[in-house]
Length: 118
Image (cartoon, rainbow, N blue to C red; front, side, top):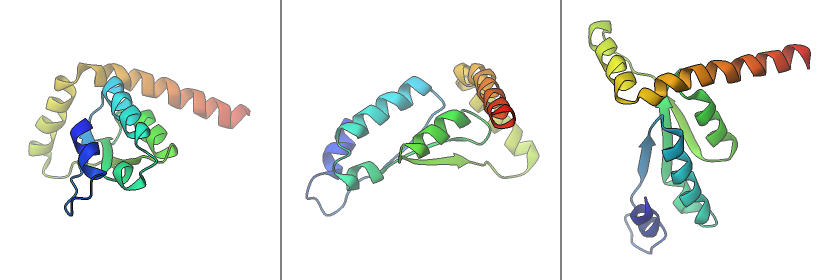
């Protein structure tokens, strides 16, 4: 990320971009802090995107977007017999994502309660 940010602020004609696809909150926060350090150069911050699978780590994606980072939700598409093994592998590869699902549910419940009861 440091190298990318260095090159995105250089006068080179071709500027690299980076897509950070992670459900790991600590990794995303480190990347966001590095981007914030060079955010005064708007072109550098726009060349880094963050993405998570739809339904996983939604609070991270929404928080990034609320703070003007490029953030997207990914929606895998395809035949179910090909799609399910992919989704299962993503969950197995990142065991913290499974723990984050409970965290997501807790945050959603708090927001629903806030909206209903003020």
